[in-house]
Image 1 (tube, rainbow, N blue to C red):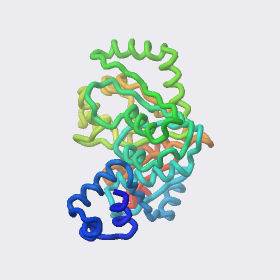
Image 2 (cartoon, rainbow, N blue to C red):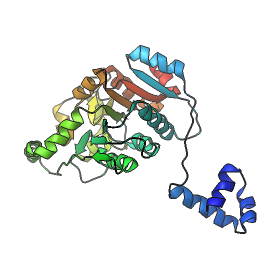
Image 3 (tube, rainbow, N blue to C red):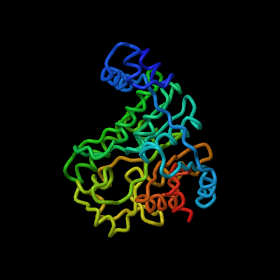
Image 4 (cartoon, one colour):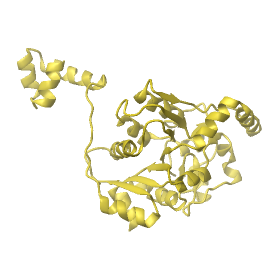
Length: 315
């Protein structure tokens, strides 16, 4: 396999040439290359040209600490490119021994995928929320914490927020109080409130959207209802309007009471702190309104986005 990889990646040989050189079939060469990628022997790193002018415009317009803008029409899927840029930024500002919190979503999945293994030691990883549901509607914070921990094992501590599935809101309120009386659960919950770096996605409100909207619909809160209430987006399962105000209405309680989350006002406090990073990773035209609302609410102090979205935000 090593010879095959050397010829393909370093000497830029075609698969047919490799097959002839090694005395094997072209189909076997293809299988070896796929196997090497699946086993993690091959890493793909995107060296994306960034747009510092647009990044500076976002910082000035929205009072951010920093912004990273990846090019529009790049070589890959937008979430993949945003994830690569977010991973590079995280590795620039992170250090061994820090506490890191994760929200949910596929963009953060791609961020974790692009992190270099064993880059840091003694990180402590926390989910920023736990959800009371039997139906998986997204890559949850607990799941992403486990994935990120795998990058840094064995020198990492990782925690989960347990939330029991219960039918009635009264049962959920009692269970919530019981959980937070448990010293170990309380320690994890409080640890998540004071992370050094939070990586968060920003969700928009749309039919069939994974994550917040799918979870809301599972508990009888339709996208139509969310829009009627003025919800334009969510961060860490916290819904907000176009002005960045958290929407806390009785109609949303079947959903909000089932979450054990770092709240929006806590994210705002972390964003204001000099030594803390709340890194929002989101892009795509459909998310412009949600990102603008999140910026208005000051739920983050760093934004990783794409050129088209950045132009819409500052235009």
